[in-house]
Image: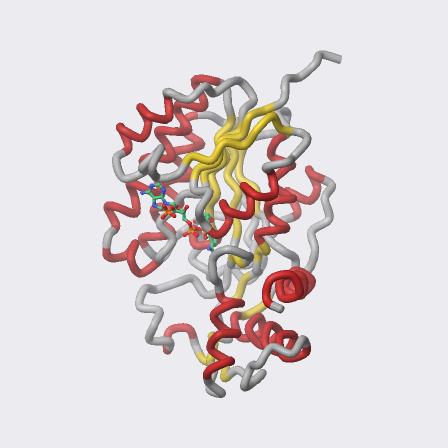
Length: 300
Ligand SMILES: NC(=O)c1ccc[n+]([C@@H]2O[C@H](COP(=O)([O-])OP(=O)(O)OC[C@H]3O[C@@H](n4cnc5c(N)ncnc54)[C@H](OP(=O)(O)O)[C@@H]3O)[C@@H](O)[C@H]2O)c1
């Protein structure tokens, strides 16, 4: 068998919620030569042509993997600043993916369930038609299309409701709220699946396989829940482990009655992960197990 040189992995967005865990977990990964984080200082996504030029100066080789965790993820901010959202979430990733295509390296664009409008009554498959409801979703969809236009070998990983160490998410916010107030509410009609970053970065190793077919892959923990069910589970387990929460009861409300969410969001976006599971042979685990591990490792 022909000896294959170990791959280099370039990581864009290593300071973010997903990026920080990926960097830590892959730093001693035996299958790769090295993981090279490129932060805003090295590649600033706000100027696409400058970003492309700087990115071209890196020594990218055939089969190297570039993972893009950079994004403008603040949905309300994206709605106000749609041009900036398009630049960072779509224009720059597409230009960087072009550089990768020329060097026969792969570009993995991390994307989101927000590309869907949330009206389907079943799990979303990769083949379902996207129809974003807001600028964040539109810019992420434009990013997917721009990346795939430069090479069919590139990869899109759509994930949802990310939580994990390093950057606070719904899990941390709901615990924080319940530690200071007995009145906690959450949407019972916003439905999808949580994704634990520690799990995602293990599953992402499958994307190192150079013979893997390019295209879109849906990836998240198994099981579907509402924000209300997710938050209630978190508080009950937090109380079980002795965290000083004042309540484990959450008032169910409708998403559109929650004043802090100004921008329209899709209501029901659970992802079907069977394509990833079939091709990788990897078992995904239920979101409740992942929450349990997060609480035990990072919150106690
Ligand atoms: N969070 C979720 O629940 C969720 C759900 C579904 C999909 N996703 C997707 O998952 C991916 C990672 O999300 P995340 O939650 O880890 O994001 P995040 O925590 O908001 O991190 C965003 C990253 O982008 C970088 N960044 C922002 N603007 C930049 C610029 N102009 N130039 C260079 N870097 C810039 C940030 O760097 P600085 O530290 O320098 O600002 C940070 O490293 C994104 O593609 C997102 O769309 C996230």
